[in-house]
Length: 208
Image (cartoon, rainbow, N blue to C red; front, side, top):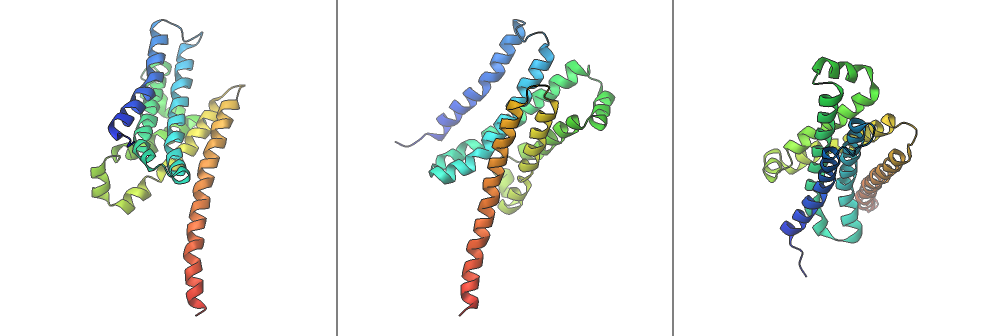
């Protein structure tokens, strides 16, 4: 049975929107706990990082399983990571800082975990803006691929931001950081393996 990419993307889109719907529902009924703003911040920040990690999971999952159709979802998952990151910033800027832009700059300068969070989100801006097929054609596949390697720095900054803002319970930040380490480690191993494959034929030619 052939998978319908459009329907599959719709299913992913629907499921990825559920956490926001639940958050809005809880906010409407005042069920976000004693500190609603902090709970909303933690939820949206966690979702941004989780979707970023899911987008990074697509390539190793596709290569290991051979399910090439998974590549249809990488862009959508990355856009949802950016989407929840923007909501995370909007909640912080609106309810914590009361739309005080100088206060935002001051927080970025004085508080390292805020700087890391802003770095993670800012690095995702060019990735979101160049997520279309037209952008790939305009930039060229090689340049587009190099640009989108910023996602690794963004993910590291996001994981550090999530860990540093945690209070007593750091189990989830540590778990997500370990998942990121595995995903990045897989890519390092793949790069080294590719270089080894390229070296072997060259060494064979040198011995002739």
